[in-house]
Length: 320
Length: 311
Image (cartoon, rainbow over the protein chains, first blue to last red):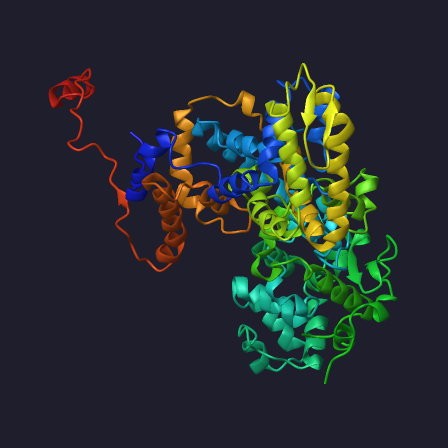
């Protein structure tokens, strides 16, 4: 059995509601209408309309009475203002329409009709308002940062490459090679070695070559420290060493990092986007203040030199 | 971060430039720094694009102005924020949403307009159809004194040729003598008619047709009662709380309970938010519990189970 709960107040309200009491057309409105209809001005006029048929007034005369002052000051004759084609009044005039409408909304004695209508009204209002508010907000949402529907529906992935399947293949083939939390250092030998050492720990064959090219032993031994900092000249030596790491030593690195990319012949290739993204490098892009620009200009891997002026300057030049 | 100028001294310059560009590009993917590369790869591969949808691909804004305008010009006719729709726009007359204040205003404005002559004309009209001045159908109708004093063939003659033209003239005089008051009257009257017209239009859009509503739908009323606490949390102008409160009959226990129920619902999120419990909900479990039905035995005895075991 599904268990639901009612509060004491819900229960208190229920008997009356289920017997069609407790809700009624707004008392303030009905009182005001009654007061208006009882004024010395309007009361005899309503009497006139009520007896008009019995007095054998013609339809055109009754119609003239019903619309008296409708285009000048309808409140002086309880008439419907002109211009509301969907509304019409009878001999009870405009306030009669208000009263009968309010009563009809309340179900004319059957409150269950009112609550059904309320439920439908609420659903419509909620749904329509979502459309309206969204439409209004859409004109300022994202301001001028919108870069295209592709970027919007892919979370910006197409800003990197419109060929998502090819990019995905290349990324998949790279295993764990790139640390997405250290993209600022992407392409640097230190960044690469720290990512590899973070996954595998130090690799002796790499360390030996680093020492062989002239990197101080204490620096080499400290490369497993994620916070290590090395000079650019040492990184240059690291790159030189990486160009010499091939064959079995390279295979070992590729294996532990889960790299299955074809065409990697030296460890230094792991710093070269052309080698890392063989299926998709040609369509790699970057969004600049001038718009989306290609990173490479042809299939041979020539780099777009315009990027030197198009990329943010903090990316191009070291800020002192 | 290592900038291009340094990186280009470490690796080939072209390669350094490409790496920096790719780094910038990848970092525009929201939340990428929290991902592992295999996670990103798994998300990238299945991504679908707007390929072969040139009209969508060519968009320079997410939602063209013409699209937004469709909604703001055709749908946004309500009185909510940004002209959104509130329930008061569909059923407001029941709650005096616009008409209540407008009628009260009408009465107060009317009191400031000298309508003695018009009142007299209306009274004469009533007397004519009541037969005070003769049989309104057979005639003649003889109005003995006043501005309409005359003998008329019948009521129709009196109305068509004297009373209605007279009333029209007096109304014109009142409007010119009391431009401010009659202007206010017109504003109130127009507002009420506009509200009625809006309700009719929106009800049609919402598919509300009273003739098709199920009479005596007790389950609908149950739903309303269950929903009362949530109604209490819709506190916008013209919202459900305002409408239900405006039709709740303050003069009886049920109407007051309805309002109290919504107030209880309004309070709940604030209390629940900090873990304060109330004693409002009454347990709905049967008390005493209903007797358990005797159903066909559905479990094995130990002996039966042992007999089944294969050795």
